[in-house]
Image (cartoon, rainbow, N blue to C red):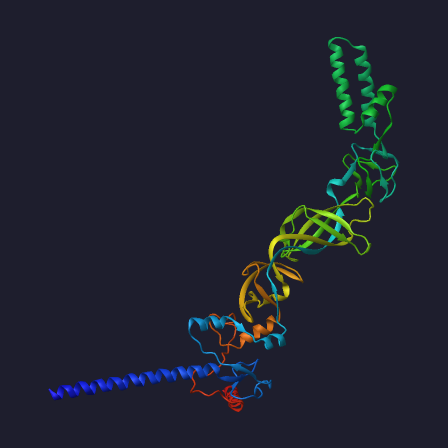
Length: 447
């Protein structure tokens, strides 16, 4: 019985000793962890792998080492801390970090493009020979001459024209002398002759009426300008014989012109039919012209990566001349969108990052999708909420601060660096001195 009591007593004593040892171990671990959190070390901003326990210079590039505080939290709170960068008030002032709110406001983007003036296709007219004959007289003798609608252009003589006019006179006399059924037949012949002179020979109703009243055939017919415009080309000379369908004049009304712009494909989404356009030209630097987008071509030029946009502009003074180069500005309004200053954006090449101040002097990186952007403001499609504060200056310094941390899944730069920071992992490890780091670097290079 005494033996059993001794065994129980000895086992209980061992249990108490074991519990006491474990408690001391946990206390020691807690003390070590606390010391690690407050432990300071020095590292190179350009080479984070260089770590020293005292101030000095980087053995690789010679830069002065920067003092840092070691972080080894692995809890959920610590993982959240890896997403953020905390600055002291002094660091914030020295880094010139300023913030601005995310605002929902109205703005406008200006799309700039270069264009060339061209003829408005609906304002062109070709004057052709309606029948074979000889040009008796030219009233418009040179290219560039302005003509008015109905102004005589040339006279054309043809034996076929004279024969048709004589048939008209005979049909008119026959219709006047006939009666009954013959009168109906004569009237139909008269109408057919009139139609022949109008459709084939191009005579006007006034010219036909003049022949009917005078009862005399004209040896030539005068052709008139169908529009008010400018002679762009003249391919006829006085006394020249022409064939049916031959183009003699090309007339264009330049009071309204088309302008073709080459808009880059990244900007074409902002250009809509009906959008107003402001135009300037080096020829008239102090004048501004206006136009409207009337057509956007459905294909992209594979060589220039631009889309052709057609602008229609009134040109009553005639200052916009075909083949003249112009500069166009298209103002695209945006209403009710979320905007931030463009200086807040940090482009990494594949994505855009904004540093958001989640608490006082605590910044977290945020991936954003950028819409339209200008030199001053940028539209944010997703990633930010109205009213949040973003860093508009000093963002790159904050980004550099976060780059010195050990990369993790929460680090926005994880995977972008190929060399990790060799921070001590336990309180028992001592950071390498500057001379040790230099020796290791030489050994790595020799290998």
